Length: 500
Image (cartoon, rainbow, N blue to C red):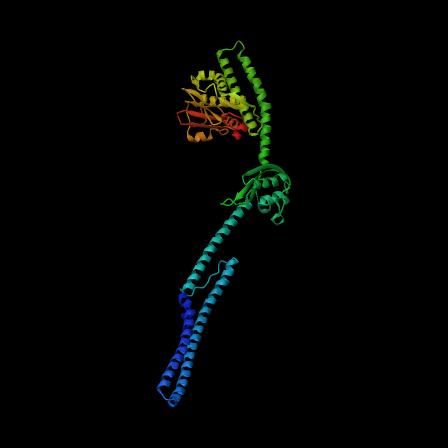
């Protein structure tokens, strides 16, 4: 039996070897003790059958035969035991060599060398185990390479992001920072990696913001601050920190993004300066122009054509003043410079005042208007002048795009809010129009021969004012079937609404 054949013995036969070994040894012992018993029995029979002289001769021969049988049995038993021990040791050696190979390859795999493989030389259980191990290692190599590639790709993207990205653990120690963050604070990665964020960031607000996100168990915190960057110059940043969790909800750390808003702030300042210039250089003279035109219209000696020209000039001047006022108002709203003077007020009374102010325009176009808002119970909590502006803008918009039919005011209660509804029978708009109707400077007709005047700020101002009241505004419409605007306003102060 050569080593190749021994190697092909199945695991089941190998398990039986110890049993065969002990069985053979036991058989040899039984042969020895069994033959000894037989000789004792034969000796008794011969003692009874022969005389003492005859038995003495036979006893000597039996003793010699007994000794020969004993040694023959002992030799046979010992020989079988030695033979089985040799076979068993050879098999153990083959298995041991495979185990050593497994151990050596497994150690290299555990150290990250996934290219290691075990040589498969048979189809038995050991060979199958080696094949399974090689397949597992190959799959592990592919998965590891994919993870490493994804990690390198993510790190490269984060490293090249124009915004600064800082990752800290739950204790506030730095785990990762990209090139932008290093440039902001003028540090090397090796100088701050693994250290508390306070070592790199000299701003207590940012450090406390990261701690707040961890303690608050989630959410996002945001702040703005100015910083002298290492390359020179003062920059302003918007800093946003967010908690990162695993899929099962376990907290991992905090990601903080530093966004440079210096240019944005400079543009805002330029815009505000420009608007101040408009206020002084355009608005004030325009008021004087309107006054002089009205004075000229009231004078004597003008024919109908001259009065018509003055009327058109007055309307254009008023429209221009309205546009300037809209731009200024929207700018103040976006800059947070508008304060509300909230108080309970009856929306029915306010809507009646707005309708009355626009009755001449409604009559000129031949439109009807109905106010179905209930005089009782239609109380909202808001700023009277700002709410008047909301209703005026929506009603003016409805009048502009309605050529026949009319407009209906109504309301409905929803929880602690009141929804004011303004429905017209105008030209309507499609779904895309409804999405952009509240955006700044957006109009549905951009053609050079468009029928409707305006620069697209009226409804933008409505949206800003409604949201300033913690409300909502939206529109529903179909082309050719009119539009309906919904304004949802609170009926109680914000503190009471939050408590409820």
